[in-house]
Length: 285
Image 1 (tube, rainbow, N blue to C red):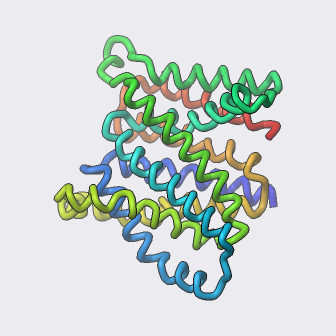
Image 2: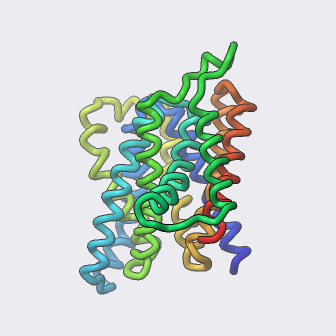
């Protein structure tokens, strides 16, 4: 069971990095994200409606669903903003690593919890990786933009959203199936993105230019998280969440290889530091 869960989570990280690559290459990030989740919402709606009609969901279950939709909606809105102002090999590692950094820090500073020594080493590695991605390079590498205060603020917020919906969804799985929970995320995305997509006037242009990646994204975006949710039924979230961050390495490689982003060696080292830090931080959770 543990091996199956591991494979599912690694595949989840790969698929997640892939649809993020598609998003970065799109014309209008909001329209692209709205399009892939609109298609996915249509595909998942029959299963979702059937489950609501045949499965009794408690008030606590609906409350968790609402909280998850809130986190998911904020996440997808901020993600589009992040890819508008930053590189994939910069945004993806920072957004995936910040939640792992902020949550233990908050628990120590405000909840009176303690971290073992190796977790502090993990935090140091993670911070070093994020700091490296935030700095401007030299020479030709300087052409690649540094992480501005705006981008860092967005990235930190995205990290908190990822942490929020991951923990919430683990509880929500006691009330609805993984397939239904995926549709909950789609509904949260649609509620958040529909107004911006409609007002952009660029839906037709986006589909004309990127219809293939929109359709692939409609499979990969929910598919990546669905694999993770299935894995959660086989192992503990604290064991699986760090492994999923292998997607940081995939996302950084994609930005360097496919988008020709600068500072490749530096960003790859930073991504590895972030992944190592995440694993150490969550090693005893």
